[in-house]
Image (cartoon, rainbow, N blue to C red; front, top):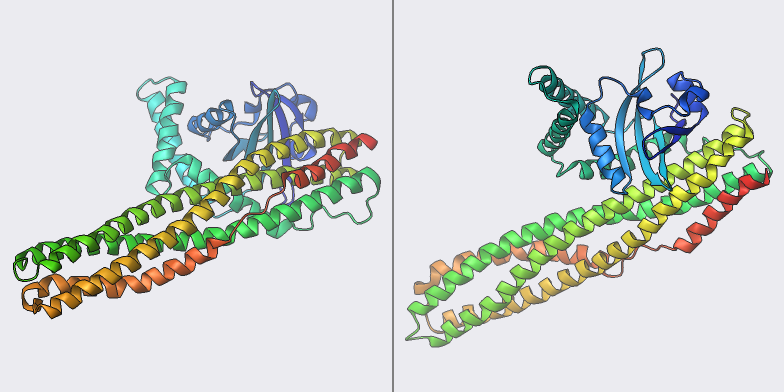
Length: 436
């Protein structure tokens, strides 16, 4: 299977194959007439754990797209691996599959092998039925991924598809270029090329935001840790001030007042942590939808290139409008995700600014309190309370400056997105085959 090759198939809601392309036919070894009307599990390999299919069907029946590594069986008993992207479409499903080359592929093979062992033992040793064994396998897959740092299969999938698309695009950037194409084929290739440029620009921008977001999340966690320690030190300073309340009552008052911006700073940093997590999730979902749209767009270009090369009949272009519909559904979801990402970018920048203001306010109060300690000769009595505050403030300001710098990069950040512009390209691609 070449890096530029893509499998294509559509099925009804029960998984019965309706359409396939020449790559599916060549790699699987089944004639198209034998594939059409057959259940898609015709190509299921016995090594595949049932838990994978449970993960897939649970998402599809909920109306959500899914991505998964799959080991399939050829007609003569051989095998091949693909990364499959599958989406609900009209009254069935559309699937585009590519040769896996991303960094998570080897991990998946180990996870699947373990899940298969668990399922086989449950059936052979414990007499469990295959449905329940598949549920057990699904739980094993998610547990294995969790041990390796993934909160869920969803999180794994959201990272895996964009990585596979990125790895593939590095090897196939000009795979479908046909400069001599004319007419409808040229229209399809021109439209898919223009759409690719827009999607690539979005991916590049999101990659930059994701990098800043990861740095901001780790920096805000560091500042939050320092703020928690400062809060503890401020509480100690309040208690120590009470000891000299008779001779320096003003120290008690200032100690009480300076605790308020410190408490609010901690609360603001905790909100910032939560917002960073939401932003990270929203960016991951958006990248997944962009990657999905890019894959369906590539499949449309692949059909046009095959027809130009006479490797497929012109009627195979009837699949192009379906792929445009699938990409259009991705664009609708992308539009909602972009709004969430842009709102989160704004909220993160505001929270960083708010935290900086509160910590500056605390810094002024702590300065007043220390001056009062000196003025009232309370240093010997309060020395143990002053030292940890000074140490934490010294450390915190360097981290706070970094946090402000990162927050500043989000201050005017926005993901530009014009769904109508993308739909115009899709309409151009969708209508081109009708002229053949």
